[in-house]
Length: 170
Image 1 (cartoon, helix red, strand yellow):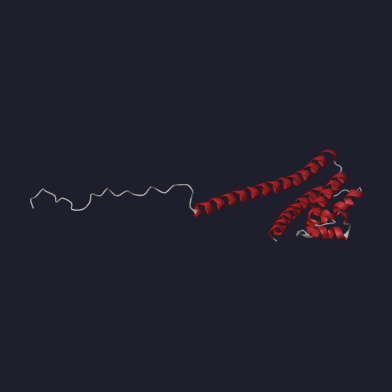
Image 2 (cartoon, rainbow, N blue to C red; image 1 turned 120 degrees about the horizontal axis):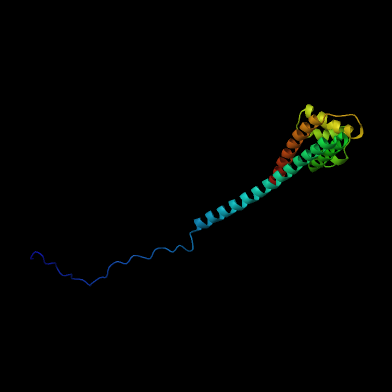
């Protein structure tokens, strides 16, 4: 054989190899569907959680705003009985949310309703004195009642939120 000459093929003439087409992007594989569903479900869950949290925070702010409005009115007119009545009504409205029949409780029953929220005795005493301050003209410590009220309401609202969360999971 002479150099530079190639042997002629003996068989049939073949065409080049053709690669298959690239896979289409649609429809996606099942794993992508699962991932899309999980992302959508988590987005819906986060939106639901955010809206619920925002609603709870607004309710808490509204309750604490009522206390501030009562104190502002007390600072203007100095009417201790009106302040005590307003604080007492607010306490009963919040207590009614987690203790059925709280609006009707008097005396020892009312103390037990207030004691359902885990606060110390120093917090309960000014709150229990509100009921007498409504009907008796004697002055009461508005600052102590305000501090006790905020402390009790913060715990009660947190407790209400935790109870609602437990009921949703039950």
